[in-house]
Length: 151
Image (cartoon, rainbow, N blue to C red):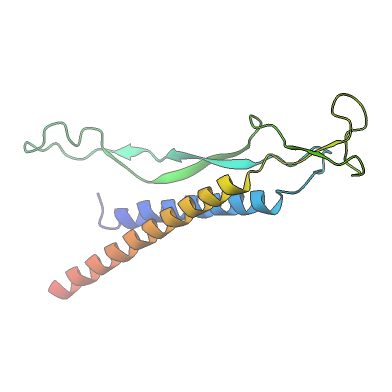
């Protein structure tokens, strides 16, 4: 394990959380969109993370089995997918141009499936994770500077 591995792991977290914040911002910006380019209401997007491959540490007699699983190399964005499980919200507005004209939902407008409260909670979580990774980078940097001063 190199001396800069912790910075590499934390920087992968920074990149992943920045992508997550971008997706959340897009969701919030389109929360009131009733029609996209394909003619359907906007669908909330979400980020799926995947851990990077792990590397193995040496075996230690002091903690048998503790390091067998290895340590990860960080995280990466696996994909950004639309949420098709949550149904779009319905709002009664027969004068709206996107209102359903016929059928049992006549007069209703299909809004996006974005829940503002959930998006704000996700945004706080992503920003806190971003701050934690940034704190880790700054701590590692200070540790390296102290090691240089000792030398």
